[in-house]
Structures are given as C-alpha cells and as structure tokens.
Image (cartoon, rainbow, N blue to C red; front, side):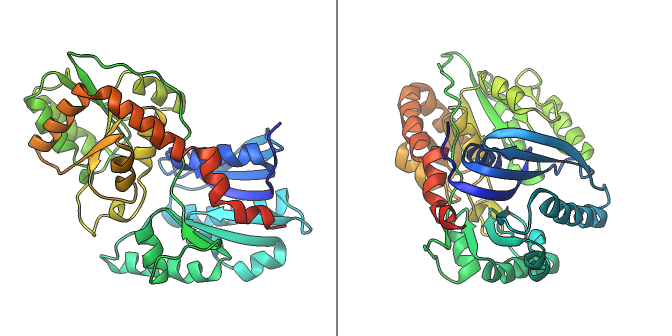
Length: 370
C-alpha cells in the first residue's frame, strides 16, 4: 500500500494537460482524502468532480457550468465553494491547490467556512500587452503575496511574481514532473514521423512545418489537438496546396489519453517550436507538451527557450533549434543518425523528473501542514 503523505487536498486538473494529470495521479496515491475539480477548456459547460479516499475513486460526477464566459467563471467559483463545503468538514485542514487566482476570491470568507491553506501553482505568465492582461497579472501578483504557498513553473515567472527568484519551502520554482509510459521505440530508417501535441493556435508555427514537409517526402507529421473552424479550414487548405495530404495527419478532435499514447507509438520525435520573444508566454514557463513527449519516450526538437530548454541540453534528450529549414533539417538528420543516444538521454531526463520523487521533494512542506 502506498504511503499517505497528505491528509486533505482540493486541487484543480484538466483533460488537456499531462502535467496536471500526473500531479493528480501523485496525490491520488498519497492523500487520505483528495477532491479534484476537472475543468475542460474545450467545452466550457462541461466539468467533473472526483473524490478519492486512500488511493481509491469513491465518487465522480458531472458538473454543469456555462458556455457564457461570465457564467462559466461564476458557476466555477460557486461549485468550488459547494465542493469545499460538501467534501470537507470544518474540523479538517484542507490545502487548496489552484492554477488560477479565481480560486482565491474571498479568501477571508473561505477561511471562515473551512480550515484552508492555499497553494498557488503558477504555471503561466501572460506578458501584459493589453489592459486585460495587465489586470490579470496584477491580480496574480496580489494573491501571490496573500497565499501561504506559491510555486512557479519557471524561474522567470518566479522573478516576475517576486522581483527576484525565491527558493524557500513556501516560495519556489517547481517544474512539472514526468510519468513515463515505458514505450519501447525503434527508428524507421526510411521514414520519420513527427508528433505535435497541444491546443492549436496560429502562433505555434504549424505553417512553418507544412512548408518544410513540402520538400521532405520521407518525413510525416501527426497533429493531435483542436482548433477553431476557421483555422482548421486554413490549415487544411495549406496542406492541400502544398501537396502533403499523405504526410500530415490532422483530425482536429479531442483524443483520450489512451488514444494519444497509441498515436505516439507510431511517431519517433516530438516537436515544440515557438516564437523566441518575451511577448510569448512560453518564454517564461515549462511547456506541458515537452513533458508529454518525454512521458511517451519521444526525443524532443524544440526552440531554444523556456524553463525546460536547459534540461533538454543537459541530458541530451533532444535538440534545441532556431526556426528555419536548415536547423530543423539538420536536427532531424541528427536524430536519425544518433537515435539511440537521444533515447538514453531521455531515460536520464525522465529519471530526474520522475513524478513520484520530483513532487515528493517539491511538496515536502505540505506534509507538515496539519
């Protein structure tokens, strides 16, 4: 039986993030009572709440929210309070772990209702390029100072929130862990299939990959993620115009974790290309898709940016590139020639970020929170 390090945890999760799902798995294994509020940003009116006790799922039920943005946040917050009141008594000490400042509204009232300590796990930084983002980041900084615990998925976020990088039991950088799937990989000498996973936006350089594939018939690309209808039409038009229909798999639908794992077994490399600029939020954080690739045992090609890039280089589990055809082509050729070397590097990377030991170390302060 797994050792229970924590007594009562309320946490948020979502279907899109391997990072938060392996944190959920970690707490399931090591918490006496765990309540998980699962939010799905693809379907605003759909969510779940799960109750675990001593590692076993006791209850799971759907929660009705709203497609209206204001109604969504209002019902999110109201349901959150209901769950706190329903699943925990006033005598139980509860640690609330959230990635959104919405959860911290009315902290004084919440503490009157239940015996709560808050952990703000800040996984994103949004460069304040407009007034709404300036207000949002200001709200985050406000609650960053009010909560008992604050962790950051990157030193740059840590610095933005505190004016300098803090490393104390209560304020520190804590990158995402990895839950390896132990998938055995071998390289197809003739063809190489690249995997892209994530929410699909214009800023993620898929058009660059489409242009690259046009002259590289021995490479294929599988895109697992969703986008809106206009972007779907645009990308399918480009794919057809480039004559790469047989090289690109782009179903534009939600994939379950099992389906995603099955698709990954047909690929050899994971890719994550970004605009290398401080106006890009990924510049500051630990992108979840990189840990997703690592969990599936896929060596990584990514832009030389973000909190995880130094570890890709340190463990030699991938290649850092600039966004141009030459560097991408050279990186793919190097992968094909030295694939075993990158697989060995990935084993070291995954061992370093193994979710059990990684989160136990990062979260040790919570074990003393009775």
